[in-house]
Image 1 (cartoon, rainbow, N blue to C red):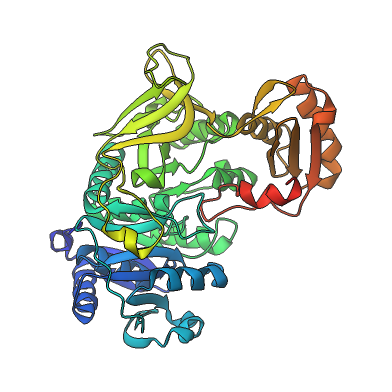
Image 2 (cartoon, one colour):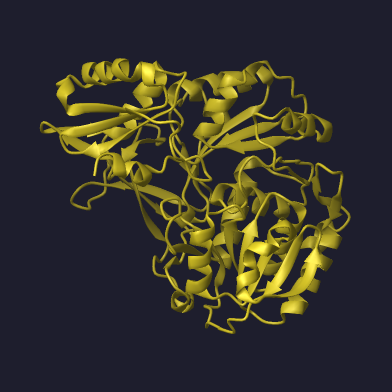
Length: 472
């Protein structure tokens, strides 16, 4: 069991835009009813939305020893079918409005809870499940494959407790949903706030919709989380001018925020008298590994901070030796009880135990300063050699976004041939000239391609693999 719902049984656990509210006592009762109907530890595919039914199903499974695979309810249907056939789950937890999409699996409806239905499939396959396996999520780079991250009960519990500690959460919090719950960052907000009996405000509206901000103000939301793309949108919305008297803090993770935006929002937080907390994490570490304390948001602008309570960072060089001097780049390695068990690519992998033993090579290149604060400088594999010069593609993206703030962009390519993707065709030549000047390299190495939008996943991260077809 992850959450003790009896501890806060009279508190509101969640509330949606319709005015429907569910107490922790009712959430516990709903969970026990769902678990009793399933009657065994097994695999469930949960197709998630930011709704009461979706969250109720999730907590029912996790708190009663049933293993959910959390997926976006609007995911590509061909991929959905491939995953279902590959893993053959005993049950599906689906929005009632989408039940027709699952009719081909000869499902039997077991129960409805709010806007969700529990369907029993005809597969009849019962995999042996490792006793510590709690849930599975897609990793940010595997949205088009059957590869899932296996998270244990210990992973989820330790990470939620760490987040509660460094954010200083209590039962008076009212976080509003801005991220999908099947995304590790969005899920961690649910996990940590339910530890403390807070009230989750559920909405499927986006930041660009006035209904979102109406709901925010009506319910007195105290916090929200966002990825870099979220903050680019908030910048366009002139968030700095918004009157949000109930806001206590806002967080950012899911990729590195540009130093320019980091500074803007840190200054905004200071002026509003609230906290802005930049964080760092990966699904492979359950959710969070690092955070920048709010009081350091301006002083350490551009940093992702220090390790969360219970965790530890270090850097390793190309020979695998620890980096001991500040301002030297190395691969970021994290150690902590929230490092997940490993991956699964089929049902047979669900019996596997801990393959990482608490250590995660993040794949991120970083430095630390003289005070021990860490700065991500790029991805280990996000580099190109251009005429013998090593070029950091993440840095190129940051420079272009800072110079051409009105549009989205992404860089990719192969050695000696960089492709600059832009969403404004009229700026294409200017972008090419700008990058050539910044790198000091011949413009012949650069090509610009104008596309309608930069492909992104649920977390707002650029899907670079979808850009491959333009240059491979």
